[in-house]
Image (cartoon, rainbow, N blue to C red):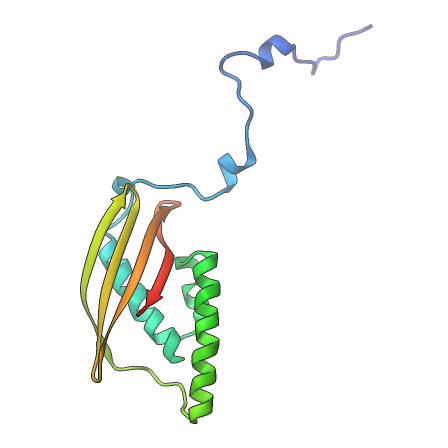
Length: 148
């Protein structure tokens, strides 16, 4: 019996430095700590601005895809469809809403997670947008968005 040059002894594989590599270690989203992430306030303000415009029909939801998780995207997609249907029933065309983004109230319940409420002021009323940001792949991604 001849030894093949590519054979590796089981002792070398079972050494203390060897460990089983998991595909998710390399290809799944990697959590980031707060120290590795930029200031969340500009992201919160811009994301709020975009969400309000998406719901009003003035912006395409695809533009938010890289800033939100898949669950948030699906939920926003449902709201966009409902808002478009409501506009169609009323005979209104989509238009860019007039509003200003007000104060941003934030808290950090854990490292790399920011929960915030952003106030949005329109002429007739004020609204609140609740957003949860998580640090994933060295940037902020919204894992929850609720427009109240």
